Image 1 (cartoon, one colour):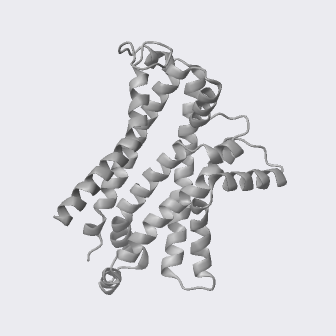
Image 2 (tube, one colour):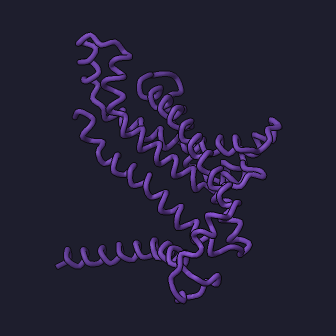
Image 3 (cartoon, rainbow, N blue to C red):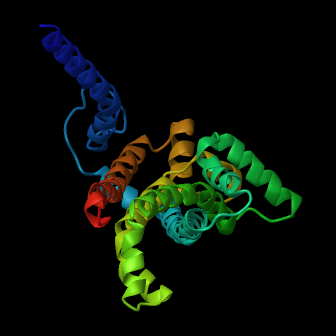
Length: 265
């Protein structure tokens, strides 16, 4: 009886949490099809008129393109540096190894406003003008953590006997890496890259302190909502970006779930 009651209570609680999380998103999606430029409930009908209006808005296209460019480069940097850091920490024993691991992970634990202020002060100290490159650097600081965590978790699960068997069969270190280690790491690298891209694409706080006069898509959305302007187009942009962001997140989730079969254990 108690287990049944507990099961029901947990089910109700889970349903309430899901409703709390997703009802606001559903409202935004519904408002994207609102034919009126006034947000009132219920909406008077359904219309696609704001989708072409949003697409033909030059500010939105420029902000979207800047966000995509920054996310792609930040993801590339994160994959390279995050993977290198994971290999260094996992393969080698050196003084300060734990400190290095902690420092790499720290940016994702710090509030975004602290990271943003710190980067802004750093760029100001060295007289570096805020630009596209400072946005990329800012995004890469916390995206590296995503890749690092994925790769080092996979490295810890790869059996060392596989590498030893490869070496015993005559393969050199590079061949062992290319034929054994890299294929086993591939899903972790891809999932980490996809998550880093999604994280960079919708970053607001760090971007605020590193963008200067640049306007990424999240900053454009934030500014439009704050000023109460172009709300129908904002609803359309938010809906499209949300759907586009779901793709890498779902792919990353599926790849991470495939991980145990690849470790050879």
